[in-house]
Length: 544
DNA sequence: AGTTTCATATGG
DNA sequence: CTCGCCATATGAAACT
Figure 1 (cartoon, rainbow, N blue to C red):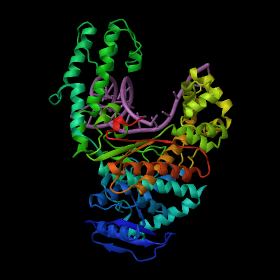
Figure 2: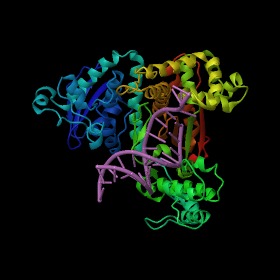
Figure 3: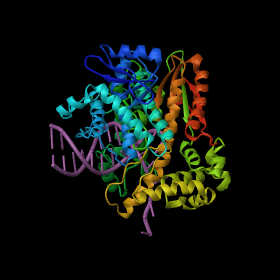
Figure 4: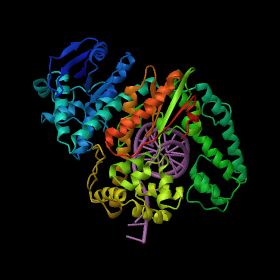
């Protein structure tokens, strides 16, 4: 069952029941308290909710204590459909969808993002020419219903509707999960974080001042350079200091400094590491993003062209390993951390249907298996070659290893080669489920064409890996026992916060969900996607 | 003074 | 002959 939703003013809004083909099976009803109406209907029928934008409406429902199981997100779906037609970047708001359907001027998204996301409100119709709206649109709920019908028809016209329907479903489910994780937050122990910062940086400084440990290192660096003032936080100043010491450097990156023999290098490397922690995940970060024991990031489903998520603020997807010590389960609870190892090469094996590669992927450690097959047991070489093949490396020391890979796994090799050739020729490539890469812009020079080839080569793999991960996330979410909660998702890794006694059950659900995700995408393929799952009190203790 | 770019770090 | 993907976030430097 489907129910269309359109939020109105003052917490009210419209609901309309639809048949499976999207045709209304009842008149639209107005409810003064939309959240309560949705809660009742969810309990009674658990329909798939059809609405303009999960990011706009669902946080409000969550704040009202309402959760739903399934939805169809019109804006995310519109972005997928436009992309599929090579129309990347066209407006995807409900108003734009409705305008296109009715051959009216299409209102732009602001900064490429629908107005609904900026305002936290569902898109209304103020951007459309008023007479046209009044004569055609009726109520916003009508635009939701016709928009859904329109998208349903367009999905059926894609090259593989079954796959595209799955893509739409996992994209929408991901949006629900993202809103829930932002709402629930990642358990974050401020006291542990604080102790960690004091241990690394010394006592918290007054606002604007540098922490004691950094001041001390800065002093040692200055002394190593002969005593004059040096600002280690300024790359330009550092380069000048090294030049004065008779050492010419291309940059002051850590890996460059590691090869330099100078007394300033050791304290400098330590300074860089700690400076990073202080500026990006220090006291200021914590006061901004952590409240009542939870870190509340804002995830952006579909924020990356490959379908990976992005974040808006808080840097949730770049939490440094050392800082993860502050991520701790509540008393009596556990974290279940699941990481899909070597996801991208396994995805490539499944997509390409490379028998020999697939056979290697049956082992727990794919790189070890590749090494045994084609690299004389040298795992490091096998790994470098594999990554090089997926990223489009054609030069450097990995060339012989790449040749070995090409010779041993020609089917998989040809799969990424073809994606690269398509990109170089200015064509579009698609993920397994049909997410389409953005088109090339303008005429490409030779180097631009090759860069685009590397991009499309990687796109097919990265985007399909993101699809498997979304399917995993959606499945885990639907199967979690109350009151366990998904609390983190990072490309190929999920974290569940659960009462300790349910943790073993959650682990089973996660493994089962990985298998379901595999089957949803690849059906009878025998490629395995092993999950490394651990039950821990602290995120930093998870293997990975 | 405000905005954009660069350099460097983090994550996958 | 070249020749490694996708991101976010910070502060410094350069720019308007």
